[in-house]
Image 1 (cartoon, rainbow, N blue to C red):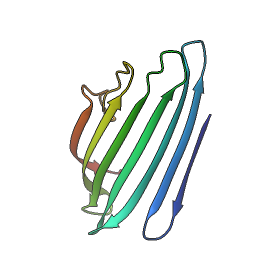
Image 2 (image 1 turned 180 degrees about the vertical axis):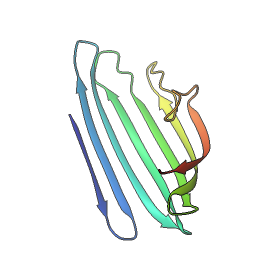
Image 3 (image 1 turned 45 degrees about the horizontal axis):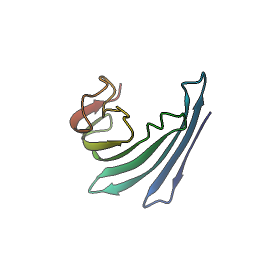
Length: 117
């Protein structure tokens, strides 16, 4: 089950997400995310907090914080910078990744270009 929402307050946009995943004995987790988007200097500052609650006996929980800035260069092209850090608990092994790779550590710094076709 997945439930997500956003609410635009004009000066700030709020984001929330809750996802419940269950299955065989090895899958019972609840993921919660809260975030904000704030217009700053012609671009957007984005920040989020995610809590991963492993409800199995392994109890491998994790928390992630992230912050980034997206700046439009044109109508279709933007540049971005972002930082994220994960705190694993009870032997959890989550890594900070992105859309093209799964990640290798508990923190990451990204710079990039986005072009929409």
